[in-house]
Image (cartoon, rainbow, N blue to C red):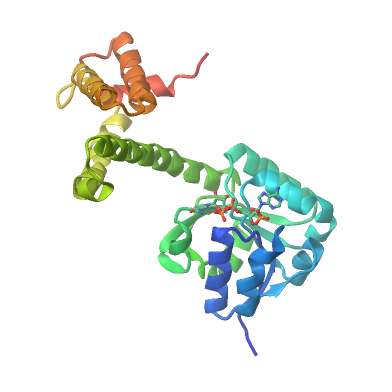
Length: 291
Ligand SMILES: NC(=O)c1ccc[n+]([C@@H]2O[C@H](COP(=O)([O-])OP(=O)(O)OC[C@H]3O[C@@H](n4cnc5c(N)ncnc54)[C@H](OP(=O)(O)O)[C@@H]3O)[C@@H](O)[C@H]2O)c1
């Protein structure tokens, strides 16, 4: 008899599908449900069971993984079947803000379920690999008892009992991911305007990205110590540099929204009197609320 824990997966976008494949690879019995049922076809061919309704999917197993676009989608899917949440451990791997995950956790708890928040840090291709990582937060005991099954999906990084913490760590990564990738798209557009392909600039782009960890460790120690001295770099130098970037892009005729936003932030740092400080002093600017 198969002693692996059976699991339900609700939400079969690219991520949910990868999760079902990972569970099937490890011989877990999997029940699935998705708004667009046809997205389950290939999974059913591999042995997953397609539930006829959300209620049926929830009733099938204690452990239920949610992989939806966001928490609004969770309410859209689960509200009509909320009576079936009692006794379920809902591992919500849909991303959203920390506040929305806290409210979602309260809602699930009020309906008799247990909510664990998750934040997956890899794309679908990283699912099923122990070196990949997912943040979790929520009640520790159910997390620990289901950890072996969750580790089929990726390594687990439990951040604490506040349901918002996994989402917070996820968002800390995402603000860096989206802005870094936008920087790369900008570089590719600039290269293209000058007759260079993405492949032509890949080695230089890779070298630039690979240099980042040393900047992070150098500046994080100084930031935590409140040091923003201009001994290594000065904001005024950065100001001139980001203006070169803006003008290079403008001269090439490519979109300048991103480099102009960067110039704007540097300009605000200059106006706040940080010209002779490091550009890490921009953190001080960003920490301030609009009040
Ligand atoms: N893809 C990635 O690289 C990646 C990486 C890390 C984290 N994540 C996170 O993982 C989660 C899932 O990712 P994904 O790429 O699979 O997302 P996705 O393409 O947005 O699909 C998620 C699922 O949500 C369902 N859905 C959305 N709105 C719905 C609604 N109102 N009612 C019912 N179902 C609804 C979709 O159903 P239908 O099939 O019927 O449209 C689909 O099954 C997201 O929160 C994402 O931020 C994704």
